[in-house]
Length: 492
Ligand code: ADP
Image (cartoon, rainbow, N blue to C red; front, side, top):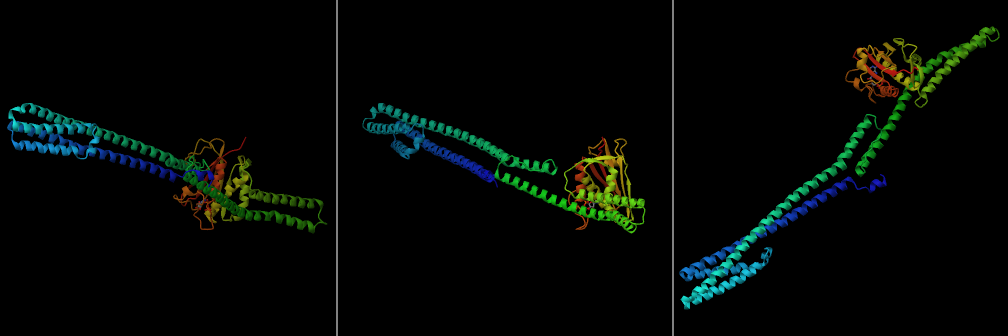
């Protein structure tokens, strides 16, 4: 792996980082909410205590009023009891009151309570000694009691206000947190989609383009380590497959070469034996024969040598790994030459007919097209298995009238004008309908192991495609097979 990619954070690291960020945020918001809830709870508890303070103040005033009316000792005792209770309430957990906006109030209230208590005691002492002098003191006690109640009331109101404002702040925080987290989730989702889903979609599109032949390499823009290593591994695999395919195509070519070699050996036999017999005659009659006969024999040797040289040359032509090289080729001669390679394999029980006009000229790579025809004829010979007929025919393509068969064959074929339709028809057993759509696939074969590699028709397809032509097969079980090829003509 390249160093630059090594330094890139991996997708896993990014996702883990994103996960921790979200988790920390959720934890932070939860802690904050928990703390706010605790404060609200504390304020509600404080509210209960303030209510108790208020209730005690009210009770003080109630027993004060009863005492003023009936001057009964139990009323005064109750009044004192509530004063003590209120004092205790004000003195307990003073720090809690800090939460209230005005802790000062507690101090004032405590002061007022002490003043009230003093006045009340003074009043009780006065009326027991001089009952007529109580009126002025009674008025002062009432005022002090009123002050206590109104201070308690103020505390209740301010505490309620405080709880209400805390709850509303709490609600706002909660809404903000939910909205914030939702936005964060959307952002994380989008980042994940950008980092993971998009590159995967890119890979999917690239793979589709590769399989349809529009591209030969996987290319992704992502620099994430995992995506880069997937794309590197995939490209490496493509490279390996390409090498392997080249290797297999070479083996297929070698197999064709073997077939041709036996045909060539057979073909060479004739001129060689002609040369040999001419030489024999010449040797025997070198002194007796007249000069014209000797000349004729030498000319035959010359002719047969040229024939043998041409046969060897065509074999060399085929075997050489040449660049794609188009030249003007008469179709009939090309087919005849190809058949010559394979003549040795055609038994007498097979009829081979060529119905190709002389005037059709292609602009094609001779070696490649010969290989394609050779593969098709070899397949036909194997299909008829020694008994039957093969017909190779060709006619100039004319768009009107199109036969139904040809229209169905070539729906989608872009070659239209100045083209030739070549058919290779055999009387073999045909191709089963479930096999037919797969015959051009590489490595598809129905033949036994060692008898077929499944590359013959794949090569034919490639060659026709390289020549901007089209090929299709039609077959019905029991009615033989027809391969139809349409190629552009190279006439100027
Ligand atoms: P191979 O000949 O090595 O099997 P090909 O690509 O040449 O590979 O052919 C693929 C398959 O197509 C063959 O195995 C065979 O089933 C079928 N096929 C090709 N040509 C014919 C034909 N003329 N008649 C019947 N079947 C054929």
